[in-house]
Amino acid sequence: MFRYFTRLLNYFILKAKNDNIRDFKHYSNIEKIPSSIKSVRDKLEEIFSDSVDFVLREIALGENSEVKILIAFIDGLTNKQTVNTNILRALMIESRISKLNREVNRETIIDILKENLLSIGDLEIIDDFKQTVEKILSGDTVIYIDGKNVAFKADTKGWETRGVEEPETEAVVRGPREGFTETLRTNTALLRRKIRNPKLKFEMIKLGEQTNTDVCICYIKGIANPDIIETVKRRLKRIKIDAILESGYIEEFIEDEPFSLFPTVGNSEKPDVVAAKLLEGRIAILCDGTPFALTVPYLLIETIQASEDYYSRPYFASLARFARMLAFFASVILPSFYVALISFHADVIPFKLLLSVSASREGLPTSAFTESLLMVLSFELLREAGVRMPRPIGQAVSIVGALVLGEAAVKAGLVSNLMIMVTALTAISSFVVPPMGGTIPILRVVFLIAANILGFMGLFLSIFVVLIHLCSLRSFGVPYTSPIAPLDGMGLKDSIVRFPIWSMITRPKDITSNKNKKVEHRMKISHIKKED
Image 1 (cartoon, rainbow, N blue to C red):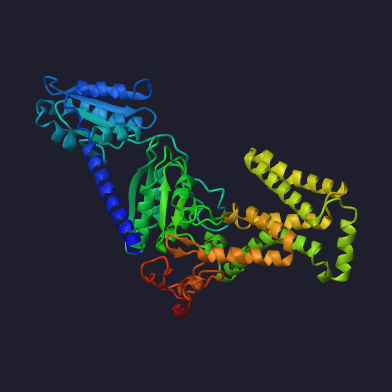
Image 2: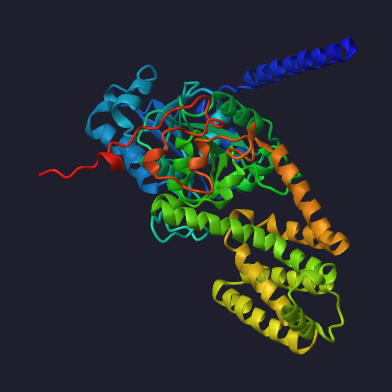
């Protein structure tokens, strides 16, 4: 025991030393900006060689053109109007009109640029040459000054983007219709519009050795658990990969159980959904280039919740959640229940129904298991074809294909009419719970195999194993089955049954560091009175 403890202690000491060495190397790798404009131009032309979208523009300032300035940016990533008006025009024309050229020299150039000429809101002075290259690749314009070891970074991002539109994956009847876009700054602005609180924090990091993708960590200070925030940052900093092209890349690196069938990291493309989760103490992760935001911790109960539940009456919302839960169980268990009933427990079927089932299965060349497996796989093929093909064609393929295939299979004597009904109910039920879209097909096949081996006993054993697995899962330290297990009475108000919003006075205690009370609504039902 002592030897094991000593080895563990040595491991952490070596790890700390390596982290310190890595940090030292990071700071020692800072490359100073050359003071000569010619040297800067040569280095930039070498770095961006064979890049037709890279633009360099040299300008001379001062009464005798004694100070030279080099402007660098990427065409297509910058707003040309901002560059032309706020930078080029200001340096080339307005400086002469205002007679600032007489005051420009190597000693005053930085102050004059910052205070008089460059009319850019986000202006930053940088002394690291590598950082200036990163800013150029991010869409900013960098201004180098002859004789100085610093440069100005001007925020001129302005590439072509998709506008804010209604998300297709989370359609609602009532509620906001705006969704995230592929531009990170637009997404942070959408969240800031929902939560106008200075405690809403956005922290930026870059991931991807080749792509240098901007990733933003969002949380509300004072509500989010500091331990979970540090865990998120630590897991993100561990990611070492060439490219981050979508938030799904990040999800696989930071989830607690990468081999589990159940998702432990949530995702959404609706700002109101992400804002509501932030207000409950969760952390959101936004990735540049994708409209899907990740949210952690993610609980099992969230799979049957929808944003529209909070915009409608609590009775209807509770009924909708109960229907989603039944749909989840039906989509997973219904085919295996059919196989177990037909193959092992036909004696529990009522006599008249048994006659009907026997008549429909008469002459079939396949067993109930083969029949179910064939129809389940056929449905998955049709669904995949409908998703991958263009939308007008995909809808026709999925609907017409299912009708034609089902009718042809029955007439050919390959499957029974009852199996067609089971498959149709299973398919409809699987569409009710979109967050479980990747989990349901695998569980369905596993339960089918178990039911084919041991009947109802195999089905119940497989369900029992899945329940044990669910109870063992955690999402960033939070029990996956909370608030049901462990039981949280206040948390049950927003679980299968949704209580009125005015009665939800506490945030989930397993997510936040303490029981932070929400702002109590002034208009509680018991306090509403008619005034004469």
